[in-house]
Amino acid sequence: MLRSGLGFVAVGSLVLAGCASITGGTSQNITVITSPSEATCDFVRQGQSIGSIAATPGSLHVRRSKHDILINCTKDGYEQATFHNNSGLSSAVGANIAVDVLLTAGLSSIIDSANGADNEYQEVVNITLRRRTDAPAPVAATTPAPENAPAETAAEPAGGMTPIANP
Image (tube, rainbow, N blue to C red; front, side, top):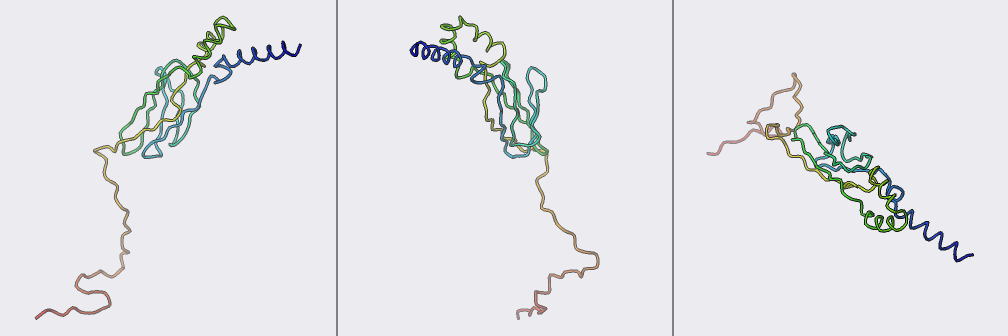
């Protein structure tokens, strides 16, 4: 009796391990890191916005799909940068198919394909934004002197001494 119970547990474990919907889920996080940081990134799939990150580095939780995601990042003074995040097959798909054919006659693969669980995106994306050529270079801030401050003279050295001319 114990032997058949262990066999049932082993088969049940294989069925669960063969289903990407259960093991990997139907969604994932994508983290975007930009150089320079503090960029805004919009995520677009099939022409529709699916979310955004207000300031990088940051992450967005997305639903898995067989369709690619375009990540468009912008920052004042920089050109827009776009990253094409390809939807690829999940690393667990190969094992899932073999187990699925043996145990569920392909049913779990059909479910995984329909809900996108057999796909995944690159989880960490690094994007470099290039400074716009027409953008002014950063300038150090200066504080203007008060109106009633004495004018500085270049001829007087510090300490109130008067220079002596060379003979």
